[in-house]
Length: 245
Image 1: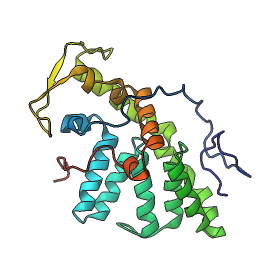
Image 2: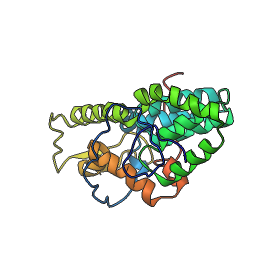
Image 3: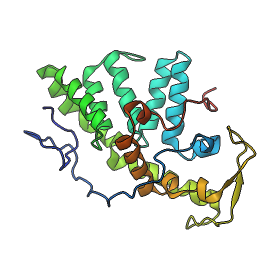
């Protein structure tokens, strides 16, 4: 059984390597969301700009489809800064397969360990597979190099980074420092499949999409109740404006 780079009370192990000074206390139990997804109609440019985890993952997928794996890797890493576990898993796979970068099974394991940090079963299984492929010297490298990646991409730092963006964006768009949404607010989306059709403020500003605690709960629900293929994407693949062009 592999060591874990981020100690978690729910996972038994023969030995645990603690690479962080402290472990955040577990949050409150998540409330079940009516729909464990983000409707594609809401994935407009403005919505994605306010959700950099989805935005950079989307751009990474676009680069991948265009045959630019190195660019895709850089964008998945950018999404990973905002605690995006699907992107972290994709980075791990690219290091494992040598796609868009030189193959490096050690970095592949560390990235998959990051992706599995919340205990999502499919990612835990992948992490163990990656560990079994490492020799003793590579396993020692994991322990030496893991802390630096956790210090940049682990939930302890990446979640607060994402939460700051969510709060700032929501308050800016609603015009209220408290994030209050007038129940009668109607929005006309300027783009996407529902362009020009009114959307209620309650739908667009649903807590599950903007409140940090509810947003993480929504992601947990997607992973718990969806298949792995469904979990890797929130909404369908789509092309968004590429800031690098």
